[in-house]
Image (cartoon, rainbow, N blue to C red; front, top):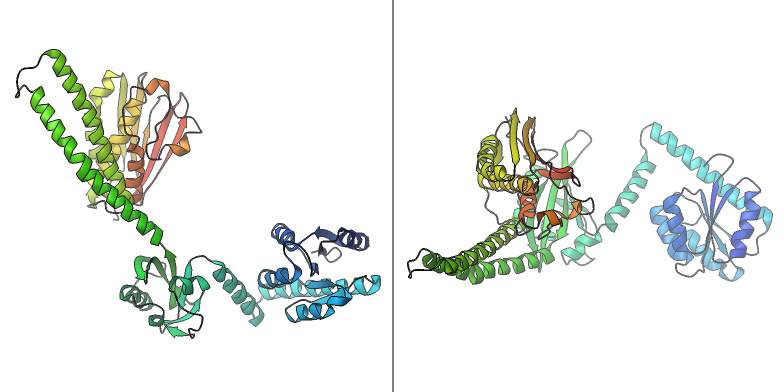
Length: 491
C-alpha cells in the first residue's frame, strides 16, 4: 500500500454494491477490486495484496461469517469492515467480537462510509509502519504472538502429524492430524509426557538420544512404528534454541499403512513368481538342455534348431522373472546390499572388456577414461549390474556404429560417471518415461534389441538406494548421455 492509494477488496454478491463502491472509492484515490463471494475473495488474496476488506455476510458459495473465520486465521492483519442491512446489525456486532474491525449498514451514507474506510486504511498503514519498525529492531511480544499464530495455523493444516516436545520430553505442541493418527481424544491434557501419546519404546529412545545431544544438530532420524492398527513413519529432529542448543524434539508422523499393505501384496507376488514360475521354467530348460546335448537320443539339425529356439525363449522368460524379482526387492527395500569400498574403475574396465566383442560386431568403438577416481561405498554386484545395463544399452542403441564414451571423475564428495553414445537418441516426449517399468523406446531401427524393459528401472532403483542420482539427456539421431552421481568414500 502506498500512503495515497490503499487497496480495497469489496466482497458482495450484489453487483450494484460492488460497482457503487468502485465509483465512490476510485474517484478518491483508492484501488478497488470486487469479488462476488468468499471463495473468489480468497483466490484474489492469494494473488495480490489488500489493505481493507468490505465484507457482506449473506453470499452464495461461501458466506461472510465463514470467510471472516478464514481471514482471522490467514489474514489477521487486514481490517475487515462488515457490510450489513438493518436486520442483521446484531450479526455484524457478533462479527466484530470475532475479529471484524467495524461495520456499515446499507444503504450507505457517503461521509460515514468514507470515514470508516479511511480509519481502517489508517489503522492498516500504522500497523505496517509498526511492523517495519519492529523488524528493523528487536522482535517484541506482538511479533512473537503473530508468529505463533501463523505457525499454529500451518501446523494445523498439515496432513501429517506433528509432535513437539520440550527438554522434559513433554508434548507442548501438536496438531489435529497427530491426534487422529494416534487415535487420541480431544480431552488429552497439555503439556503431557510423550508416553501419554505413544508407547513405542524405539521412538521414545530416539527422542531421548536426540534430547541428550548424542546426534548431530542437523541430523534427522527416520523409523517405522506401529500405533494401534496403523503403521507410521516417524522422522525426528532436534529443536534448537537461540544458541543452537537442543531445547526439545520435533517429530513428523506419516501414515504408511496403505504402503505396507501394498508391500505385503508385492511380497506375495514375488513369492508366487519365485516358486510357481521360476522353478518349472528352470526344470524345463534343464530337460531341453539334456535333449539338445543328445543325452536322450540323437537329434537331426531341424530338431536341434527348434529346441535351441525354445531354450532362448525360456532364457528370456527367466531374465524377465529375475528382473521382476530384483525390482520388487529394490522397491520393498529388501534387496541385500553389502556396502564396501568399491573400485568403480575396475568394474567399468571389466564391463567394457566383456562388451567389446559385441561392440566390434556392430562397428562401435568403446572408450573409457578415469580421473581422480577413488573408491566408493557400494555393493560391487549392484554396481556391475548398473554398468552392464547402461553400457549394453549404449551399444545396442547405436545400430549404425559410432563411438560410446565412458568417463568417471572424482569430484570431492561425489563421483560422476557419464556414459555417452552417438546412437539413435530418444524423443523428448519419451525421456520422462524411460525409467518406468516395462517401458521401451519405440524406434523401428531397434526392433532387434531384446529386453524386458526393466533394466533402467533397476538402474535407477540401485542408484537411489546408494543415495545417488541419475539423469539423462538425449537428441534424436544425435545420441544419449546418462549422468550418474554417487557419494564418494569419506577420507
